[in-house]
Length: 305
Ligand SMILES: O=C(O)c1ccccc1NCC(=O)[C@H](O)[C@H](O)COP(=O)(O)O
Image 1 (cartoon, rainbow, N blue to C red):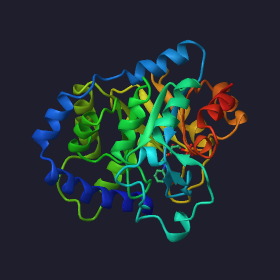
Image 2 (cartoon, protein in one colour):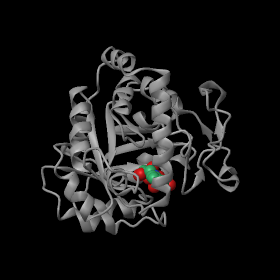
Image 3 (spheres, rainbow, N blue to C red):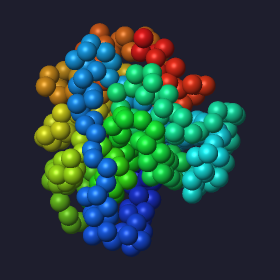
Image 4 (tube, helix red, strand yellow):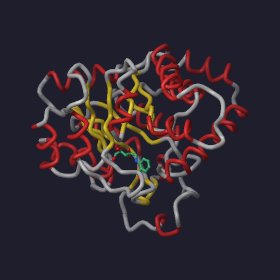
């Protein structure tokens, strides 16, 4: 069981309670219903793959628990409520940044779109990734790409909120539901699969795609019981933070060919990309390698050329 995931989920549960108090479900639902039309995330991936290209979900994240701050400055042009704050969950060491790179979601989204990304992934978690809902809105407004709300979803409210802020896809991390189920305090409520099926159905009813993410074979067995074609294999071990592309290679053979496998985390070099493509893995979720580059879009083009 991963300590970091436990910590994130415990903070997330509190955040959801606060969000529901600040804006009741009926209000967020009406915002979701009047949000901009959905952009088809799944079709955007399929189109790239059908054209023989890598389908790249290009991530916008300022920081992460494993790496601290990735892009050090916040552009004044994109100033938001959290622009000058560091996330309290990052240690003092992690909050030190030697990067002079500007974090401007608008510029990053624009360069990703110009250099061949299929979709965007925008971190909206504040405490652990220095993300925000505003960053997602800014990034989406800067291009025509479909956008994944990258967050830790445990409740219906967050899915409706995702649509309300313009998201086209949501993430369901199987480990998050399994942890919940195994937690000592948890004595009631649906089992992980029932809850994930319910959340998937809600996302689909709002027109959004669902990316279901797994780290191992047990989680994959649950994920394959959902209807979504998008199966993310996260190569990051959440206990050690190490990444190994073997995780993708080992789970691959258990996934029916009609699903789209997305390899996530630790894709850094053209050799990593070639290895995946040799195994018919054609969809990628990449963050750090792009965030550390002067021009994230140029880096995307170089990595996948
Ligand atoms: O990145 C972390 O430190 C992390 C810690 C706990 C839960 C999730 C975490 N990462 C989220 C991701 O899955 C990555 O942002 C994504 O796959 C991109 O990975 P990378 O290209 O290695 O930045």
